Amino acid sequence: MPSRRTLLKGLALAAAASAVPLPALADASADAYVPPLRQMRGMWIASVANINWPSKQGLTVEQQKAEYLAWLDLAVQRKLNSVFVQIRPTADAFWPSPFEPWSHWLTGTQGQDPGYDPLGFAVEETHKRGLSFHAWFNPYRVSMQTDPSKLHPDHPGRKHPDWILPFGGKLYYNPGMPEVRKFCQDAIMDAVTRYDIDGLHFDDYFYPTSTTAFDDSATFAKYGAGFPDLASWRRNNVDLMVSEMQQRVREAKPEVAWGISPSGIWRNKGTDPLGSDTKGGQSYDDLHADTRGWVKKGWLDYIAPQLYWYIGQPPADYSKLVPWWSGVADGTGTLLWIGQAAYKAGDPAQTAPEWKDPAELSKHLTLNRDHPQVSGDIWYNANDLRADRIGSISTAVNDHYTRPALAPVLPRLAGGQAPRRPVLAYALRRSGGVEVRAVATGRDEPFQFAIFRFPGHAPADGFADARNLVAVVPGDRQVRWTDPDGKQGDHYYVVAVDRANRTSDPSHGFRVV
Image (cartoon, rainbow, N blue to C red; front, side, top):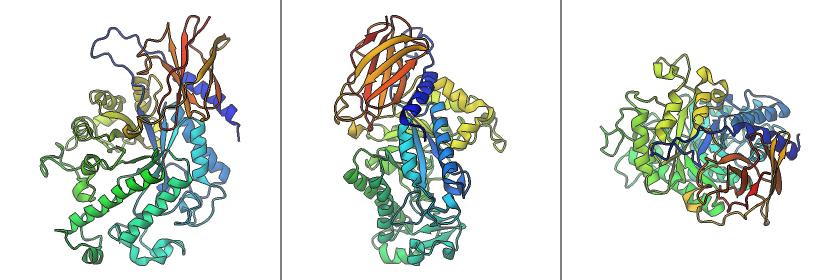
């Protein structure tokens, strides 16, 4: 395996490639875009059904590792700062869990040790590249088939057959049973407490249906007293899962970000005057997921609704849903990130001309700029970021990721202790540009260094946005990075960044002579 120094050297090249000069701002007019210092730039890496990683079951350890490293290379290439990796896709585990068996998506056999710790490896390698790692869990799905006998003999669904229910060709844990809810939380918290993850992430699957075909009637009869109907009781069960997860994360690891990426419509205005101007499926009614309520009650650090529709699309228009979600999140302290449908752009199965337009996804990010509540995007899925059909991804990256970006700070952590101010040891002209050497101070090693370049001395507000940010490089006690666009007379500064994305005061400047 390459050393960290070798990786840093490679990252320096990637970071240099990301330092694309911005077009000169014509004036200080209101419509002049200023790139933000902080912006979520994430992608989902799915493991269920081997969608992304591993690409198929039974790969060797080295093949699985190589595939994951290639996804990280892609994240750097696309100028992202975070990955959301599915590590519990079907009530199984990508780590040695005492609660659930090894995932069969790894080896082809549930319960079979893959020969290494995929989660431990993934977290370590992700951080080496200065990327944040969000561990993605599906809360209730047990299996992609309905035969309990095909589960591992030690699977909780085999030991507690009353915990699982079939629906739609799959098996699910029964969310209405308190012991199931606690077990799922315990299984998830095992990964949160044992691994150095940056975020705990749920996807959009809760109850699989609003109908009684998901037969939890016996559970409702036992626990549903005091609720007016089945739907209210189910919704309360999901509410308990969400609110209790928040409490457990805050108690165990308060700096871990806790969030959910729900389907994009809470309720339609025709159903509820508080709903969006849409006519699509409603998470509140169809999945018993009160996504708007979670934000308003402060149960999440962020919400990332999957707005997988084009601008102007009936019955769910992207340009109507972004303002609606912005209004929901406004003033709540819950960050709003948008789930983007990279998988639809250029897909031959999509008949709408908008999905054949290479600029459609870029237009989404342009629209987001008018809504300051939106602090970034997560792309689904990794395969599509790599394929870049019709150039839709590269168009969005070239239009909007012209500068590096730090991941957002959770509002509740913004007042925490900032990193120690680093030292800029030198900024010297070399054959390949200007070499900068940043040195950490204090006991804690920074997660990243943000490197700024100014034509003269930095103004007091010069570090508030990314206009002069030329690179974000992985942290270490000291880091050397070469700016290929640096020149004589430029002034450089470095800022230390911790794992919560808080920043230090800038170092003293260094002028290139």
